[in-house]
Structures are given as C-alpha cells and as structure tokens.
Length: 397
Image 1 (cartoon, one colour):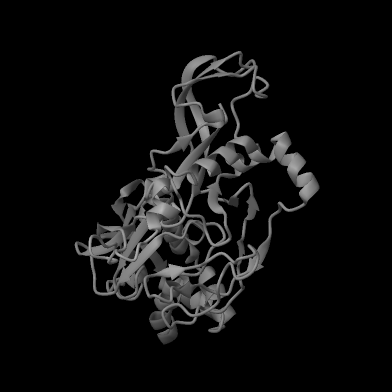
Image 2 (image 1 turned 30 degrees about the horizontal axis):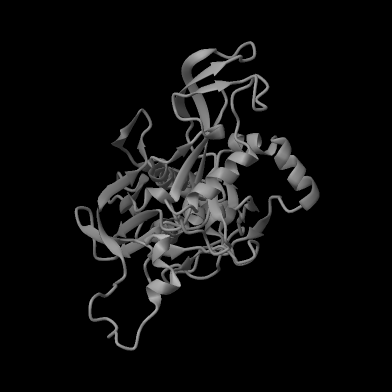
C-alpha cells in the first residue's frame, strides 16, 4: 500500500501532459505560452502582442525610402524598437471534475481503496502504471482535464470577429440553393472558400504569419472535413496529386520550449517528421506504457488540416430560397459545423504554479476508505491578435 498511496497521484499527474490524439488543440494551434512558477490565482502574467514590421504600408519599402546620402547622419531623427504591446493576464484557479448535475459546482474524483488493493494483485507492474491505474477508471479524471483544457483553448479562438460563410455571404444574408452548385442543399464549404480564407489571412489587412512549413493551421470538425472532401474540385485535385491523406506517427513525449516560455511542439519542415518532439517534461520521465499516436494532418490549399470532435456547432441566421423538400425556406437559424483557420501567435496562455496543471490528493480519506483527488490549474487565456484567425462555417440545416 505504500507504493499506491505515494506514487499513484504522482504518476497520474505526469499523465496530464501526455499527448492525447483526441484532444490536440494546444499541440496544433500552438498558442504563445508563459509559465511563471511563482504565480498563483490572482497574480498576473505579462505577455507581449507583437506587431509586425510588415504592418508598414507598401510605400515604406521602396528604394527611394531607404537610400542614404553621404551628408545624412543615420539615426539622429528616429529609431525603431520591437513593435509590441503588453498583454496582462490575471490567473484564475480552475479545478475538476465538476458535479455531474451542475457543471458550475466543484466536485472530486473518489477511488475506493478497496479497489486499489484488488487491482494491485493482478497487475503488480510498477513499470506500467497506466495499465494499472486504468483498471480503476483513473482515465476519467484525465479525460475531464484534457477535454476541458482543449475546449477552453478552442473557445478562445472562436471569439474572433473574422468569420466566413460559403461564397463569402454575410451573416443574415441570402442563398439561392438552386445556384452555385448547392443542388437545393444547405451551403457547404468548398475548395474555392478555403482559397479565399487563406488569401484573406495573408492579405495586407491581416498579415497572419503562417507556420514553419508555410501553411496556416486548420482545426475542423469531422463533418466540416466531410463536406470539403465531397467538393468535386477537392476530389479532382487529390485524384491526380495523391498528396492529400491522413498519416500518423509515434509520439514519445513533448518538448519544453528552449526559451523556457512554455511547451511547444513544432511542425516539421516537411510536414511528416519531427512534428512531435521526444524528451522530458520539466525533468520528469513520462510513465511507461503504450506509445500513443497523434495525427499530423495533411497540407492542402495553404492549410494543414486537423480534425477535432471537441468543437461545438454554431447557429447562424440565413435566408434560403429554392431549397429541397424538408429544408426550411426563408430566414431561419441554421446549424453550422465550424473550421478554425489560424496563423501563429493568435492566442496567449498564462500558467502558474510550480507544476502547472497537477493532481492533488485530499487528506480526508475517510479513515483510508477512499482516495479523493482533483485536478487543479492556475491559468489564463487571451486573444493576442484576432486578425490571425478566421472561423468558417459549413451548414447542415
């Protein structure tokens, strides 16, 4: 029992950081992260919102503007620093799980010690603690944290005011479903829409920085991706290029950002290698067990696509004319599947506490009848530049 009491929450705590193929938002969106080990709830963390040199109008990049005469003394009239703004994040305390009947009410994860004693007998493998802890359902606590953290980050990206409906129709606008290839059905996302989104993200009004492989990121729902795949132009392109598919590679662990500013998992330059880096997390070896696999997505039309089933649908008012039978005509609230298209440095995350997210054990064990646990995190999220994000819709109703 000594091993169980002392090591169970520690091993489980490290599992909070193991990549999970179901909840991938923070790995593929790669927000700016700053972890201050000295901060707790109520404290603040400073991030920087960087402005880019290319924000200067095109007229500032001519030969005449930068030509210097012998009579000029350089630097006497002006100077440039790194263009940035301070972003102050106030950390809040978050815990889980919640009361199953009231998501706003805190709760605990309770494991009968009788179950721990029973599960120890058939396994007795301290080199594979996840196989052991799974026998008592401890993954429920991990899934609660991972799904919550994944959802919170996604919701931050969804707050952008830059949205896109098929063919660029504004919210509240009208679609003639007998035209534009809709075939009487609700408007679906198409290749031409993806091309417009990418073009707009890179335009001088937005200047969203792509990732190292030259692509923007795209985290989309499975139905959003299904709609895109059914576009005849998408099928035609992939039929001849053979370049669009789904690949998976092994994952050993994550890697700390060399600057110490937080976790980072960069794309590989070729899109298939080094997408996930192996190494230690804060000097701790991840627990043994089956090596998970993570999606690396695929590059298409200037985006690297990833699927997530953790993105909610959205209701948007649109007017339909000439719809097929069974589809509401006129102005109505329409159900949309979402795709989030983004560049680098769109959202910032602040994390406090010595260990960051952690598993805590309650000293009240009811005379060693139960092990009572929660997860806790001191954190804050803030959009750094909404211009770097576009939320696209594909309609199902």
